[in-house]
Length: 257
Image (cartoon, rainbow, N blue to C red; front, side):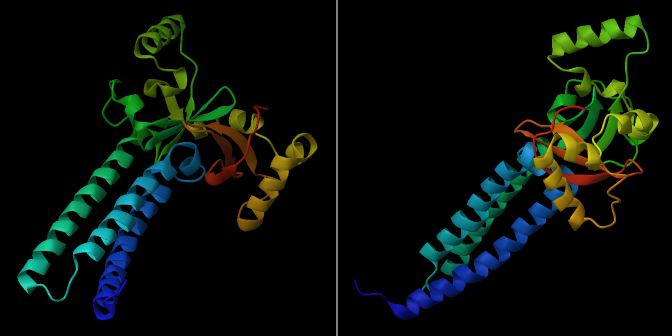
């Protein structure tokens, strides 16, 4: 088979330029996911990786591949511009649709309930009536780190049970039970694992925790607390520092304390 080397070189040059633009778009999406929608360890527990694979398919495979197929410097400039314009529109539509879908299932809250953190995604709140300003009252959140309070009385407990049953939701998914984590921080800290406790009971998780602390020198090892966090796709370990701030996490299987 004889290759047209000048044409092949031109196609490779075009696909390289297209890939460079696509990588920038994927980088923007990844930054949004890691900083806002699925910060560690939620990226692995709640489908951030799944969404990223779809974007990679559209952005780094489909678009550049189409450019390689249609690009030919021998074509009339107007026709070439039309071909590349159509590819750009299709890629941007696919990219926007994929990004919108990822945003629609982002983690909205990380809720502490009965010794475990739970990742709660945006769709869980669509069927709930959210009072104006109630999210803002929980503090800055991307997503919100909250404690799930106990019902105030028997009537509210009955309401929680009834609503949860009809809506198919667990108590940790009910936004009206949320309060800032600071409101219950002393109790939350007693339900977290210290590094020493991990070393005694779960040496494998303790080794991962020590490795994580080695990369985060600003987190005091004796003040850090480690918690089980459950998401849609799996479990991991969430880390709070001595002031109760969420500092990230890592993969691992950790029981309740």
